[in-house]
Length: 259
Ligand SMILES: O=C(O)CCC(=O)C(=O)O
Image (cartoon, rainbow, N blue to C red; front, side, top):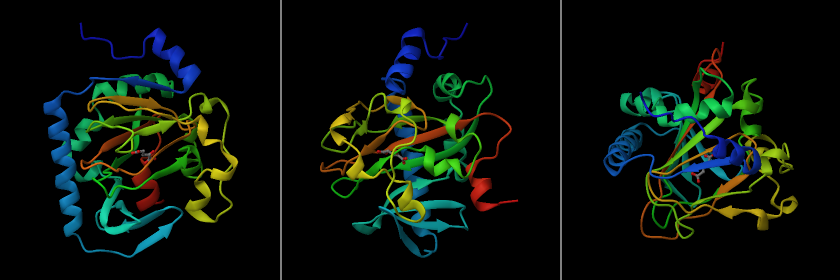
């Protein structure tokens, strides 16, 4: 019989108490290399595509690439460097397959609270050596609530392709923040208004989570999190796959092909 990948009792208790579950050694070195290679091939393809205008929205610099049906995030401090991508599973058969890997989906069933779950969106953060900037303090919920009715149930599995340290900008979370509902946000129009207002949030509550490559962190849409710039000489890349209950469209259909 295949090993159960579902959350065990201790992990379920941690999820309730802290709002996240961390599993180390989930993916082996060879697998991480294959996933990383697929990501880098995608980024090379994207860099060859015709550039559309880049827009500064909140703390980020976005480009909507309609041809490839993806959203590119450029480093605001170095706008020729890709910071990350959202919506890419349709561009890579191999990344589409990894998105459905049971090591992501089985635990996420327990977070979503469904036996059948579907991919909602997927993100890649590259955080390049010396150039990768911050992912600003936020909860995922505000970004999704106007978009899908299941926003409060979306679960994310974040896979680290490289070791993540305090120096290279590991994920930082506020344990227990998922129980506090939506946090106060910046008084800005548009995407900037999705970010948490740093003047109203005690960032001493943040806990850095340094992890080895191959670790997966699972969390829900209300966990407060961020990551700081990469001050090291090596990239800190991560993939975030987010899942929702069945019967709901993928974010790509909602953003790129609205009915
Ligand atoms: O890669 C990271 O540091 C976090 C990414 C993240 O939270 C996001 O893209 O919403």
